[in-house]
Image (tube, rainbow, N blue to C red; front, side, top):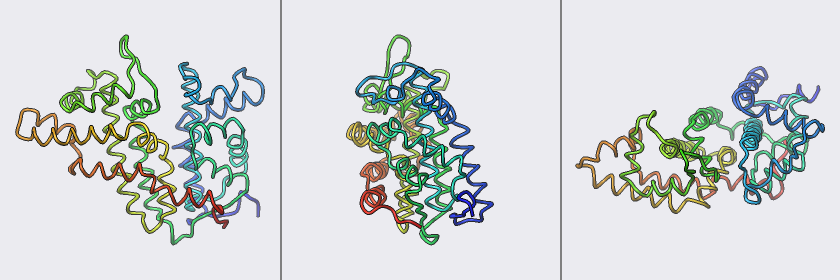
Length: 335
């Protein structure tokens, strides 16, 4: 039996193949990932003058200002996200082993020194590293069927779509990642957004603006609201996976980069802004600002106070501890 014919999935082999095609369409074909692969091949084949080490440098060492570089780095991020979702799906038995051509491509890309520097040192991500180990034959770990909740993984994919298909969330997350956006003659970034978040009245007013009248900071605030909804849904999902801590940890690590940025860079200001907004909302319940406050939390029937708790759990790293500790010690078990 060839490598590509072996079935390691917890579902019927034909369904596992369909699942793989679906993930490829969602996380590869419908993203910038193919462009990243094409550019990678051009660079490594010597048909591009671009240096991969320069393209995938840390923005802390040298800022990323070229639109061409921004777009290509976004494409590589899409490619890494694709490999991360494949690692999750493979670990849960949602798909079988990768076809040989896909496996070889994963080894070539994820094993490249400059790409590894990008996802291991500059912007540490665990799942691409585990995917490289899987594709290169270092391990074939699959969770036992009784430790997997595949319906929860399906809900996870649906939850991902709420943030990954939102243009507003893209702007907010880019600001989290130190990007600045032009609005007329001014450039705006996360520092400007945090100022608005600390002004509840202005925050609510901007959220209620019609789409055609929004400025870039208004769009980022809409993205912030999408992010909060996503975080609440993610926390609810992960708490429901307490009986399967490795699956819980795998799912958390897919978005660990953003949770850790929030924790390390803006966590204190974000919690302070939410507390201030909650106090203002309570004080204005019977006042003229009530409509704006209601708009700001229109589809969130629970209190903002519970949001603090959810964010703290996501940012604490507790959900990701099991996978990190297992992979850093004796290694994940081999099936």
